Structures are given as C-alpha cells and as structure tokens.
Amino acid sequence: MTAAALAEEVGIADGTVFRHFKDKEEIVTAAIDLFEKALKGTFPPPGGEPLDRLGSFVVKRLTVVRANPELLRLAFNDRLAEAAGEEGAARVEQLVGRSVTFIHDCLADAQSMGQVTREVPVMMLAWMVIGVVRGASSAGRHSAPGKKGLADTTPENLWTTLEHFLRSTGKEQTS
Image (cartoon, rainbow, N blue to C red; front, side):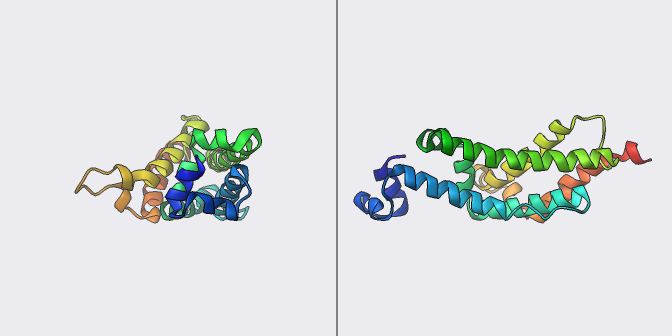
C-alpha cells in the first residue's frame, strides 16, 4: 500500500499519483467509494420471492466481481483496513456485512416459507452461499490447468445449481 507500489500497479510514475490525490488517505477513500458503488448495484429491489431475490443478487454479484476481481481483494485485504484507518475499515466491514445480512435474510424468509430446510441453521446456509460466491469469483485464479470448473460456469448456471441444492434440501418441509 505504498505510493510507489500503487503507481506501478496502475502504470504511472510514483510522483504522478499525488497529482490526482492529496494523500494516501484520499486514495484509499476513493477506492472504498468505488467498491461501494460497484456492490450497491448488485442488490435487487425489495419485494418478491426470497430465493428469486437471492438469485438475482448472486448472479449480479458474480458478474461484477468476475469483471472486477480487485473488489474481492479490497473486501478481504487486511492491508487496506490498515491504510484506511478505523473509519475506512469500518466502512468496508459495513459493506461486506450488508451482503451477509442480505443473504441471511433471504434464506431466513425462504426457510420460514418452507422453501429450504429448517434442519440447517440459516447462518450455515448463508455461509454456503457466500462460499460459492467467493469461490466462483476467484476460481479463475485457482483452477487446475486444463480443467473446467467454476471459472467456466456462468453466474446463471452457478445460481441454478445452488438454488437446486437449496430447494432440494427443503423438500421435506413441503411434502
């Protein structure tokens, strides 16, 4: 998180960075602003079936994160939290927390409607969804050479598979 490393990453001379930003804090704040803007558009409007809302979120989030893999690095980078200070780190944590809460709430609503199993705690189901999103977001960097996997699967197909799993675990609730 040095000015020299940042300048090298974006392909400019280190002194040039501070022609655009007054200091490192302003750079970090701008990065968090972009992070927030990118993630905000992945939340569907309120209302509708909980699993449909969750599916819309998963597909949009995967699409955005695959197009901008640096977003995952921002969300889960301890060095960013250090550079952002307490206020910036709290902002990033709040943004990530909003996603976790959204996933949890969709699954809790689906569970109360008998669409997913009541035998598995909602938070565990939420972590399964989060794991698929994170895994599928970074799958391209961690795939075995020559092997097809999550990186080759569209966000829509990933959601279809995940939804099938979530709904199939709820069959005992509706039959």
